[in-house]
Amino acid sequence: MKRQSGFTLIELIVVIVILGILAVTAAPRFLDIQSDAKKSALKGLKGAISSAKEIVYAKAVIKNVLAAKGTTTKLDDIKLHLGYPTMDHDGLGNAVLGLNSDWEVVTPDVTPTLEVLLRSWNAFSFKDIDPNGKGWKIDPSDLKDKSKSKGCFVVYVEALELAENLPPEVYLVDNDCG
Image: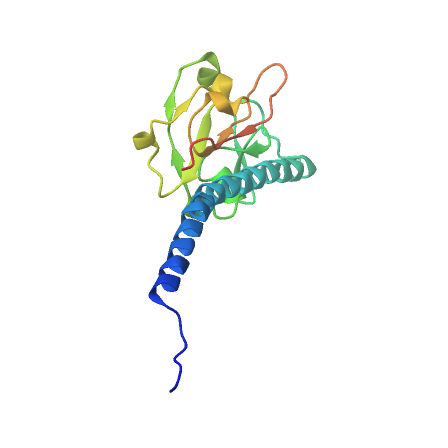
């Protein structure tokens, strides 16, 4: 008489239950990967914008194309204000490769402050995220403390003319990238 070998039904059920328990405990770690990827992409965008503004400014200084106050000029198809890229398509959009095609300019809800009246700024986010549906909020005076702003975007604040010119600033808000 031959003896058959194989798994019993009970053994198969035990293996399936163990795999189910592993999946339930491991799944939450892998489900948050999309949020982490978006945060990393935003950090890369912030770095690209910061580098581009400094490189463009250095080229403007070398070529002596720092426009007079209140005016703009161009350098290699990049529109400049005080030697830095302006916040529009012709300025920052031409200075940062892929900014115009891969990212979207968004206008989150803004708490009006004196800084908003003095300085122009744009926020850049992923094309597939609807900022208005998420209720993103920016108080420009709170951008240095990103916990006070809500959203998933990078903010470029254009250079400001004062007695001493203020260079542009780049802020990252990534506390709602889910």
